Image (cartoon, rainbow, N blue to C red; front, side, top):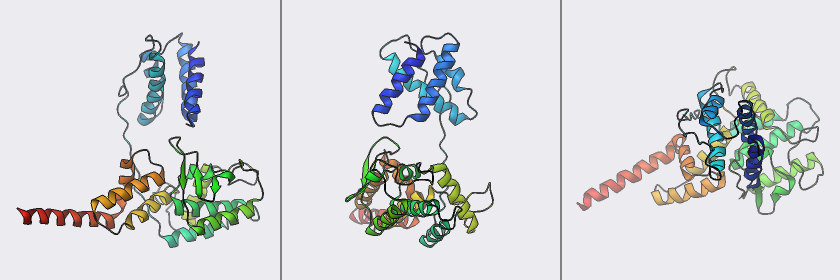
Length: 307
């Protein structure tokens, strides 16, 4: 079987586990075509490095190599003639998290109200943007998770998220006010089949995350919450960060065990693969950091008193 055929089988296997694997599928198709153009029948390290090096940025080159490496490892397990490049052959990926811009509940309400004035008055678009922004702020969902919801995902127990980042599903219990807002949207949206997208464009297609991102920036800029193009400011993803921060600030105890239990619950709710990813939100939660610091100092004083 050609590398193109083996790449297709590998992608099918990955997607069968629930992973979207769309970007990886495109990259593996490109790599296989590149390798076959060089006459390769097996994955070669030199070819993998040559192909990965064609990316425009360091992080993208590292990502491309990682995709090929996973494919090569899979093939190498069955045929040792496939070579597996070293994971750091293109260097180590440096992940830069942009600083969060936390919005107050009042500012979020202003953005939601402004969304109702978006173009195409009389269409469903302004109402969809209004509802999705409120949903993200109230649940901490990823934008892609919200736009990927189906009508059937609204259940009596909450919202079922099936298109999560790591291919796992989870159930999000929601406040009655959130469910009411979704019911209002369903009335505006109109009837549909259970498997139809929950949020749709006027064309009837699923709402696009890129449109939502651009609309949010435009709304924030129009309200003076964000500067001119090229300057940092609130992003759509900051609604998720704000949800996590508010949830952490709701921890009334500074006891580390209580905090750990709360972090585990929050990590599950947010759909994080590792609790460590949730701890990052502590950076923007000075209230909770002060409580942890106070609890640590108190524990240290108690131990000194015992000595």
